[in-house]
Length: 119
Figure 1: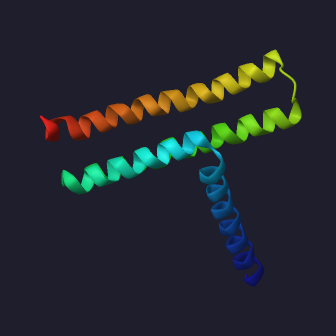
Figure 2: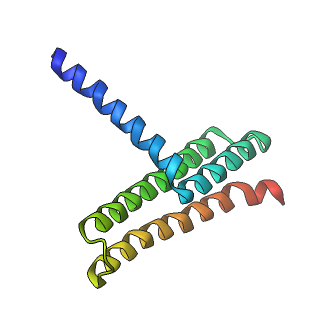
């Protein structure tokens, strides 16, 4: 059991390191972090409900998580095949498309939450 706990603590450390590296090195995550801060401030300003907070937090986590997966796919593809390759480009485009679809959903969630409070 002790070994299990040590391994879980190490895993958490690796996860924190990965999140830190993602925010530190990736401009798209930096922009999304800025947007997350803005909508969090907006949540306090507009006094959104507990359910709206839950949806907003889940949406922020989803977009950041999908962006992290996209970044890891891109880095892995570039490592495996550094030169331009049609199939690698296809894989990277699909990963970017997943981020795009999630971002559109996040925008819709934001509009649903905040448009009634603004107008």
